Image 1 (cartoon, rainbow, N blue to C red):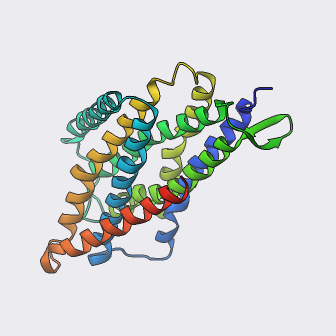
Image 2: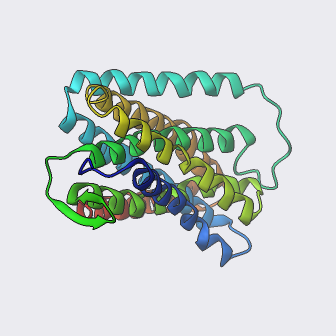
Image 3: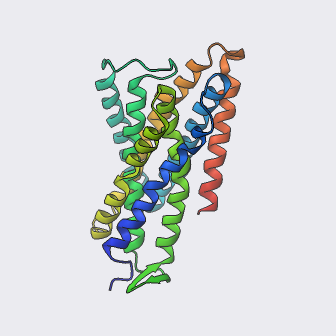
Length: 267
């Protein structure tokens, strides 16, 4: 038996991390309406979470795993891909939102980009399980699982919770029901078990591709932050004192700080 674990264990690990995104929606079951400073602040929190995840998380991990030029190429491809998707959706006339704070295009981009973002996370899990150079952390049946695989699964599970919040904010603002938002958050994480299994099977050949995939996801997230989340937060705060900018900045600081703390604590 390969020390990294068999495919069922790898798939379950990826599935666990993907399902964790649904937990990020829980705060929205405690409140009925989100408006004013709270809405602006939440846009900032979402932007901060994704900003930290894309830079300190994905870009740093990509550079650590490969050449920075490969990461840069992946980042440019990620920005270009979402820019193309954005242009396709620009003239799309969706249903009227319940809140003027967000339109259908933003909600669709949020789901699509965060779904793309889950692919390299799944790849990271699969590569961790395939890495037989680390000592065994636990044995399940005949499957020996390395400490690297365990720590990677726990880390991405925790990281996915605030990322679930980031995907929930535009959907809730758009008027999607809470349970449907949970469903979309979970759907955005479903590529993780698939990516984990594929990466586990092709770990050697994917070594060079991993930095590119990290960069691609980071570029997509950065586009979402600067082209969608921050402008939406600014628009939602137009009627507030100082245009809501202090609330937006405070949200960014809280979101980025929380995500940075999670990234540091999970290694």
